[in-house]
Image (cartoon, rainbow, N blue to C red; front, top):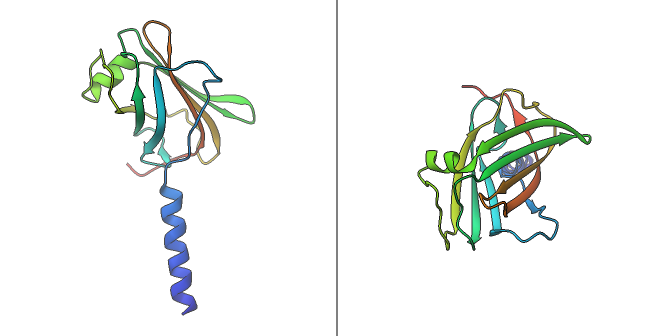
Length: 152
């Protein structure tokens, strides 16, 4: 019986490890163009040199327009260890959702590569921020994430 309990505990731990981290709002009271109710990453943990997709759910209140940017900053012990920037409309178009993205869109998925410079196997405080073409903050979300070297 103990053997089966140990196997069940390992299975639960493996499933829990595969869950996307819990993201929280980092907009610091600034009004945002989307009220985020959830953000998930797949696959998780992140695979260095491979694609990760972020799915954001919430309520879009203003259109996402040309000139929008996506910024990803990772910190470890307070130091920047990862930085990546994208044209948000290019990323969205590659995922089948070209700009202008109009309200009331409730789910947006965008996929980008995890850069080879990502540190492996350490907890990184990741901040994902999108700024609209009109300079409004679309969203800011943060979580502690881990990347790893995965088989290709």
